[in-house]
Length: 141
Image (tube, rainbow, N blue to C red; front, side):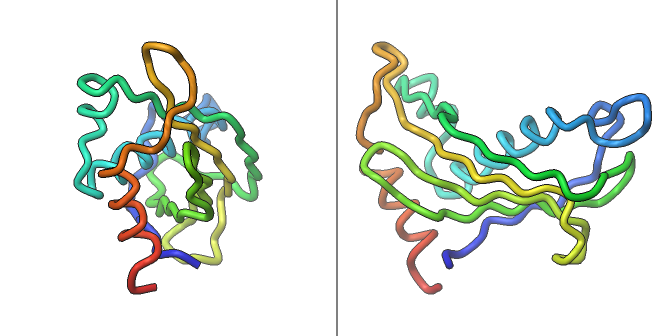
């Protein structure tokens, strides 16, 4: 298994429905933010990829399991691991838990394909991003 990128986060009012629990699409917003934070943490500017280099990172496949509710004010842990690194795509295992790993709120398998924002076609993962992902995911594990 590869190394994990982990971020602690508090569930906000804007994450919740009128019942006071996370409205399930908000998990996708949180976890998209996690991917953005991870890429920045790798030392590759997410903004630079998208705005300057015109590289898109769309999700092309997504499977999610919702195991337990998260409520307004809960502290959760978002976790991302690289499962597969392809030529143009990467597969991630992402999860949201309470502060204890066994308190699983939701899990997700996500496939991201890097694309040209000009042609909207798949492109090879840029060399600097590939090296950063390889060093993060597969070194010292």
